[in-house]
Image 1 (cartoon, rainbow, N blue to C red):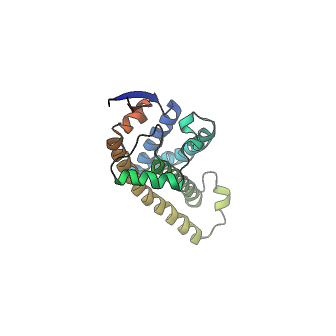
Image 2 (spheres, rainbow, N blue to C red):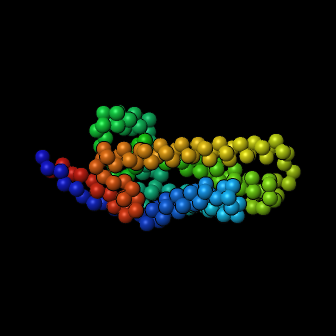
Image 3 (cartoon, one colour):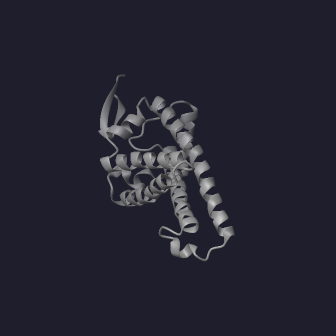
Amino acid sequence: MQRQSTQIEVWDPLLRSFHWLLVAAFATAWWSEGNNIQLHLLAGSIIPGLLLFRLIWGFAGEHHALFAAFRPSLHNIKQHLGELLSLHARQYAGHTPIGSLMIYILLLALFVLGISGMLLMALQMGIGPFAGWAAGVSSDTEWLVQQIHHWCFHALQILIAVHLAGVAVESVLQRSNLTAAMISGKKALKEVQ
């Protein structure tokens, strides 16, 4: 039996741009926090805009960008976990079931991080879309929003590490460079002949 590789277009240019802009905005916000507040606010403010684009593209985009195309189910997640534990994960054209779940968790955590950041901007500086709301808010609420923002940031550090490890493991098991696929948009799938 001979395995032949076929290149297929998986990630469209807009989805890839979203992904790498999100990586750049998050990394910049992370680096600039405590070093350059203006840069931190700028990079942090880009994240909710990117997430809004992703929400729209999740319903109006190309096939693999659609939320319906990577809806995780408990059955598929269990099956995929079994494949991973046996070190024989099959190839998926789009996201794997566990990868799909991770994408939803990352998007949700980034949304909470972005909203809590905008709330903090309003509470501490009186600027941004929540500035009017922030005028009469107690210091306890500000403290709570700060804790949510910090907790989300630390959770995202862990989630990103798990995501990167998952990409590395899946790249090895699927014999397909998933990072290169997110750059080129093309994924090599092996076909049994």
